[in-house]
Amino acid sequence: MARKAEIRVGSLNMNGFGSLTKGHPENKWGKIYRMMSEENLGILLIQETHLTEARRTEVQRMFAGRVRIFHSEHASAPTQREGVAVVINKKIACADKAEPVEIVAGRALQVTIPWRGGDKRTLLCIYAPTSGGASERAEFFRAVKVFYETHPEVKRPCLMAGDFNNVEDPLDRYPVGNRNDVSVSNLQDLKAFLGLASIDGWRAINQGKRAFTFHRGTGEQATMSRLDRIYIKAGTLDRTREWAIKPVGVKTDHNMVSVQMTTLNAPEMGRGRRLFPLFLLKDKALARGMKEVAWRAEDELREIERVGRTDAVNPQTTLTNLKEEWMKLATEREKRVAPKMAKEIKELEKGLEKARESLTNGDNRGATESILITEQLRTLKEKRYTAQQQHIKAKHREAGEKPTKYWVSLNRAKKPREVILALQKEKPLPNGRPDYELSSKRMAEIAKEHYDGVQVDDEGVTHGEEREANIQDAIKALTRVASATQVAEMEEDITYEQVEFALQHAKMGTAPGADGLQYEVWKTMAARCKEDRRHEKRRPADVVEVIRRALRDVQDFGVCAGSSFAEGWVVPIYKEKGEKSQIVNYRPITLLNTDYKVLTKILSLRL
Image 1 (tube, helix red, strand yellow):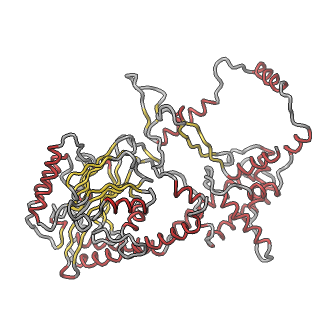
Image 2 (cartoon, one colour):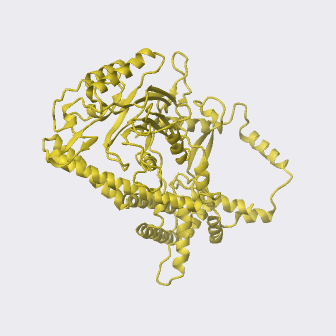
Image 3 (cartoon, rainbow, N blue to C red):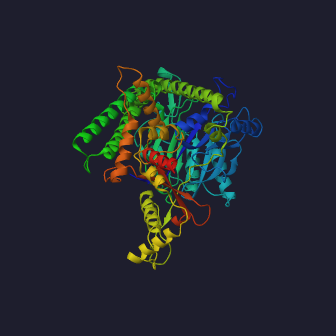
């Protein structure tokens, strides 16, 4: 089912700058981008950063242009106290036109960011004081409010997130207590002035439940609080989803809070398409399953040869079924072979949820369990980020200084994937103004109708015998024609060697067609067939022959009704001119299936 395009926003108190030394246990920034990638975060609001301009520049350089960082530092001791920052992941969110405004130095920073759908969203990062007690906190919230009162030109935020160092609900503290915190009243005044909801989003969704973002001590001395929260504009809760509180693999004493946000003008997005997971090509269980599917295809081809083909059962449908079964096997295997560490993390997250439920139900034993599991999760996630970093370093040593696809990707300017936000409908509104479609599925239908219409003859085009006569006249005007020998060569049956040659010389790393199977899949299976032929006790799975038989069937009978042979995946590419909301300003690129491209390569070689 389609849903609105969205961006995940998170908030985390990182508890100090740490170190930038590679491999150092306090290297927090080295793991922040890994965390943002794994959690699919577009924007991260960070508190207690201890950033200076020099440190910010160094961190941003370290990420090779993948992120953009805005920060506000403490006036006199930036490397030792306070500091807030907004980190934008350029792969997900647009950072080029982001506009920062410092509200309170080192404690409150606002950034306005272009959003999917053509909108802009203003986010406010907060780090409330703690050392000076409730009175200092109250004065801070008052100062933030005064800033907006005295700067009416500054846009008010649609989201305020951070470490507020207080709680508004007794449930958000363990042990439960009704401590009098005068800063809560000032925070509520600030929210009301900014037009934000009186209750934070997580609490609005999880009424009566308990979860914490900060803990201290163990056993009977354990205390926990939900200090980190996200507030959104009043009345916009229905445009958010997946509110979460999670431990992260960054060395800190806080959990991260996050939410997925969308806007009214954001387009509805489909789930995309599945591609064959190439990292599983070396998986032995999947390789065995794919061989068995290919063996069944070979058996079916022999049966077709014995009894004859039909429109429902023929070499083309055999190939289609083989591809579908391969994709199904790969999808199921991908779910089962998640790394051991990822499975452990998932199990611990389930355990943490149960501990939170027991706390909600009044069982205080859940407090100790919650603290222990949280620490385990932080340690395990940190190990996972470290392992991922080591893998990336190894890859960089191998391909980072060569003219490879990896090198090109590394040095290419980072920006979010382009999305068609809306397409203009053919029929305008009753008042004559243009009407726009936001659903990706219906936008695809608009594109289909347009490109189909391009092939329709205009008025005045001749028909029937007159048209045929005009065609023959045009053909007669050609001075160069294929010889009888050349015509015979083009009509020759496709051979096994030609299919094998076309596969061997196919370009790797290209986007697959609608079937989701890349060249690498076919090349790997063909290579295994060759290897198996060298061993008497092995039964080879000859996928080259399966393709050849399907292509021969196309030669003799054309593309059959049940075959996916001629299906393609159409990608509209903007022409860099004209309105982006008009389909006429996009040129279609069709991604074709490997078997189709093998046929075209064979024919082009003959030409």
